[in-house]
Image (cartoon, rainbow, N blue to C red; front, side, top):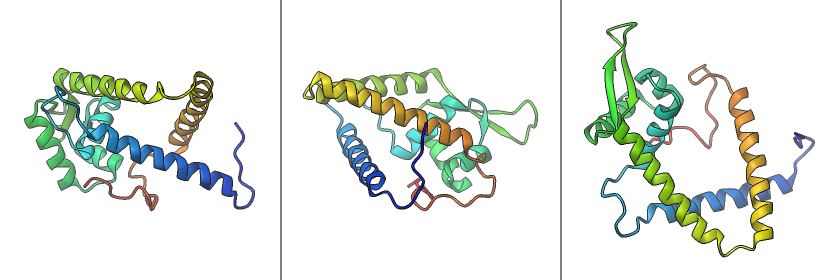
Length: 174
């Protein structure tokens, strides 16, 4: 996959700006909960915790904080709320009683599954307004961007490895 690196490429900035705009519109669109949807509200930071726990079962609070680039007290409060909802379970680590492992519960996974299905349904309704040819081009572009994101994440240092966070991603746990 070729990456354009020579000089300022305003085309890259334009595409990045357009994607950012779409992502922001999606965040607002998905936040509007349709009638009959889940009565449980999970904040964006709590949702990020659930995404991490889904990928990294048994992660401890320190590792989770590094993954989210968040203060331990913030991570603990996020997990408190998710535990109260029945979405997260804390347990002592078999390796060290002083460490607490975090796992998503079946109820938490079911909530994520319902949320994703609802989001996909709502997005499909929007995409129905797009021509089939445009949807095909969009699908190809989305797959390329997804693959690039996977590559970037694979190349990134482990969370908390001492590298300063990118200015745009620092401390978004609000």
